[in-house]
Image 1 (cartoon, rainbow, N blue to C red):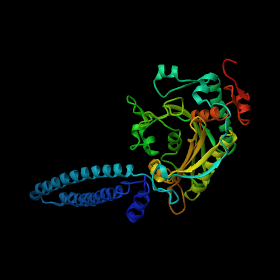
Image 2 (image 1 turned 90 degrees about the vertical axis):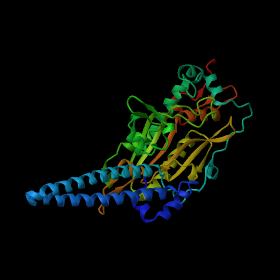
Image 3 (image 1 turned 120 degrees about the vertical axis):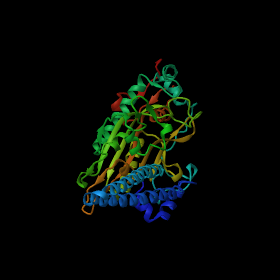
Length: 422
């Protein structure tokens, strides 16, 4: 959440930054200031009533017997007023917290203003192949290879699910180990976090209350299925005071992820590009505030190096403010070329959340001039399903086989995935 002191001290700067996200966002600042003013007024009132109650309490012992009943009656009336004021204060504090929780992070000054169409392409790496045969899409290839089965998945689980079978399952395991080995060598601590998390974890990472429609929830236990291991990894250090000497902290979490895909009706219904359940390796960093911009570039460099090792043509996009998640101040997407669609599609993203999540989870760094929230960042090292889509399509051969990139061959134990009928 935003620093309330910053909003009070420089509301016009905050409004100007939030205006980059689109219409109506900046107006929330006025609502926040109103709620803050109401709370502070009630704090003053409650403090005054408590002081008066303490003073009158001392008068009871000093009152003459004939005056004591009147003094006690006055004290009772004061106590009732205090109860009402405290109830009003609790309501005002809840209102302030609700308003504050819904205001997104301030976009970085370098983030492009506007919506999705205003995002800026920074570079393209690799050249899409010009196939001299009819291109198959990933589902046709997956079925030919015995690697993907969405028909039986629909029978078992419904739409937007898929089985990875045979070489598809082995390809996932190879991708995960390939990426984990690279990140471990780079100093990331490998993690397999829980995927069922409490409401506090979802709130702390900024997915609640604004994104509830995208999240699966278990009603009986009031637990949420995380849509990314960013949620349990960032929450790993909630309510902690960290020594600056341990920073940066870098984690690589492998987990299954769950998303409702609300609002995506009719989009990417074929195959496994947009599904309710998928596996992913996510990078999360905790750094000092003045190091977060450089850390963001580091996470992006890891994402690009992985895509280059997998020999996938891609482009890097600087995401516009209106298309940022609530916690992000800046985000870069890496979009891989998908031959069957003739366009680039998002494979990975990396976000600098500055101190927004750290304030919500209560994670601070100890410093000589006072403790302060640190900065958190996240980045997708490999979204397995989408990466398999890109690998199958970009490395397909005329007979339906798929060439395995050299970097992945030691992990898969093969240089070619053959159709299952061969």
